[in-house]
Length: 361
Image (tube, rainbow, N blue to C red):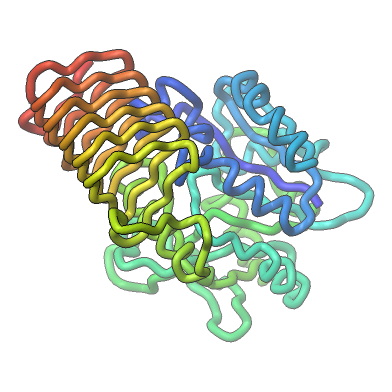
């Protein structure tokens, strides 16, 4: 079986982290975002993953080389020279996706984090005998999204309503598809949208079916949703009684700590924290609802909440970092400095407080 991951563009919403690496390589819960997906695909027997990409393919491929060996899965790139939307990349990668077997292939949006119930999706797809299956997820605010209207019992998709003004339903496209190769015959090699152009046509022919995603779902393409996504992800590890979750007197709620990280005395860590490899957390530090990436040093009595601390950064003694502060790679926050929502570009030194949310160039 094969799969295509829609990697796409520049990851501007996750800057300054994406100034250092392409968005799919930004760490989420201590491993690159895209690895969560590749591992889930490998687990159900996918043998080849194609990355549809228009930005830094060399960086991606070089990085994923070691995982290709480790996971024994083939990873290739299909590079767009112009942005092709969400359907055009499928036409571009056609030759990589089709073989003689006629088996369906997966398509995933690279920003989506979930429990990836791909095995159930294969069963669902076989069961309905249609041409395409999509995952849908229930959301609280459907007006921000495209809503999928479907028959409850069969899952047959009736139509799509883009950003409805009045309530029509609460199920939205979750960005995970399983498609028969015949779907590729419907897509032209041009910038085109799978949600607005391809799926509605298949639905009109009654060949599109939707499966409601069990468990959590989040599009983690922007900081606020990234932080929420970490909470949901750790929550799901807790439900599965995962041995990966940290325990101890200084841990509150769900926390992930890489085994190479060092944590000092008298810290209070959690809930919803990920601490990456090689991090040093000095004594008396307080961390909650945050991600601390590889090689970060947090000095004594600093307090960090609802923030993302980029690779190899330092947070000084008694510093306070909160309210969706995002530190890019190699940022140094001085002692006793306060950051209230600062977004700091890589390789900067912050010596004075950031009192309101702003970008520090």
